[in-house]
Length: 134
Ligand code: CO
Image 1: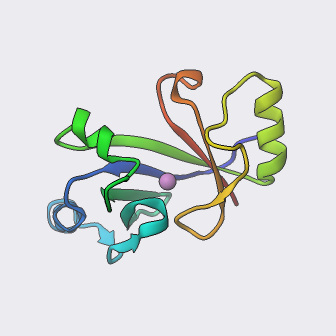
Image 2: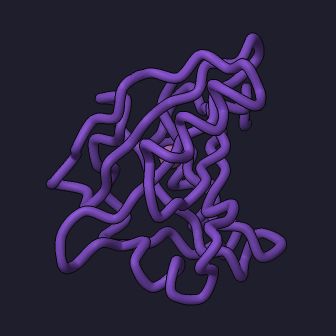
């Protein structure tokens, strides 16, 4: 069912510092940071030949990654995102398989403007999984 690895998301305290580090030390191409108040994050994408890295910096009081950074002050891998062809069919299959879909179970529009869902890390090897409709 899952297809390509769309991105690996890394929570960071400072998205500009992380972007400078990847540009400088790693020679990466990094897009400018984009505030996404509706998601409580500022996002910057690192473009790799085969996938992307998504830097997530908390934005606002109720940011969903503030607690994660509290536990991981240096930052850390926050989630991985796999592409699926049909997100509603993927959701129905996962529910049948007993996996927990976070939130209401209805896809939301994610950082790329496409529908996404998140799956409970305890059901997937301790890793928060994002599914994005390709
Ligand atoms: Co993501």
